Length: 258
Image (cartoon, rainbow, N blue to C red; front, side, top):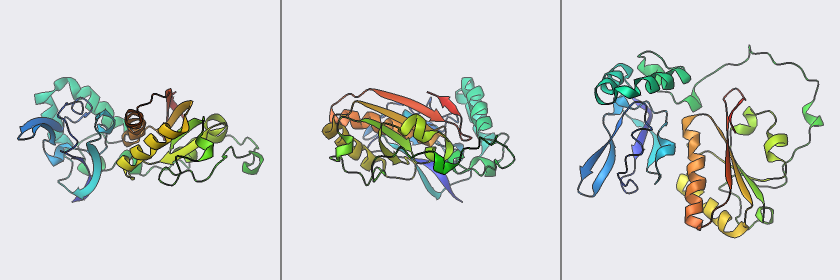
């Protein structure tokens, strides 16, 4: 079947093993190769494709790819966890519950939470009487997509930069007033876009702009943690440290951490 699954770039992998505790399914192992230790998937059916491990890799070797792979098997995964890391059973159960994937259904668990179908229409919100046209936009630049912005653009000079996942403005109602106001903006999706190109672009912005601060606002889905990795690697590449803060937004619009 064709589904989303973790792939590991052996050229980038340094065999550090940081991804192993980051994988609730214990689907990754480090093996010795002719090029030294490398991370490998144990079996395709142990990987649920949710990407919880993405933010743990210091070199960016982990990516989610859609390809032909055996269906995720939660029952077999639980048996493996019992054998190799029983202390991770509770973490695995919590991980499945958080994404509505309890039980041993391989069909459910193959879906990434970022693309899982949810319907909130029955959840009523109080009518505040405020119309969208009454609330001014705080956007002060164009373009905003990370691939399209110019690192030398004047609005980046000595700016407080907001790095936002592109789903956030649709999810968090007060995005403009609480996060965008007074900041330059770049948006992107670390799951669907070119992470290495993003790192290059962010490094160029950091090198040229003299940023005062960076605020990352991302979604709670695991793959979105890649934005934090992009900023961290970009600062390394630029050879500069900029104060960074992180905000995580829930799928239903709540603030998870700030």
